[in-house]
Amino acid sequence: MKSTHRQAARAKRHLVTTYGLLDTLFARPDAPMPEEKRRHQLTRMYGGLHALETAPAPTPDDWRVVSDAVNLMETLVMDMQICEDASGLLSDAVAALALAGARHLETGAAIRLNAQDIHIVRAVLADYSAMLETLSERTMTECHRRTERRVAEIHAGKSRPHDVQVVAV
Image (cartoon, rainbow, N blue to C red; front, side, top):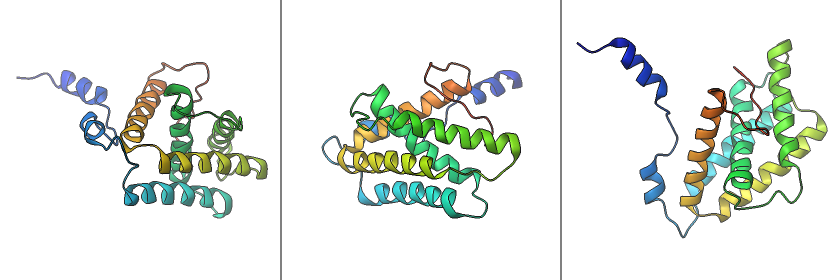
């Protein structure tokens, strides 16, 4: 008879990712992601930002998809070093989203960005959009894998100096 404790421990260790290693290996190294995948990512990302700007009560999922896109850009710049943060706004966008998430958790207020933070996040998302249109499918799937691994490490308590964690938004 198998131990249920061991099964539970294994289940907790399994990281569910958007793309697996085989997805990365079979992704095209010479062309961007297919149009429908890019459109899906960009639609969700900009839809989340629009909700944070104008919706009466933006959902945590709206905040999450915008944060995911900023995290992906952070991976491209800091971890993979494929592009540069020429504007210097990436860390400001991370801080703005972390502050909005933390404010929501502390006060229960709607998840909002102020006007300056909206412009900062919008600029970083435009940069991510350009990278998504330019970089190969293989590079972007690897970026997703690294970002999801880094977020899992942060949740496990293994953060780096520049990492920010907002719990349970």
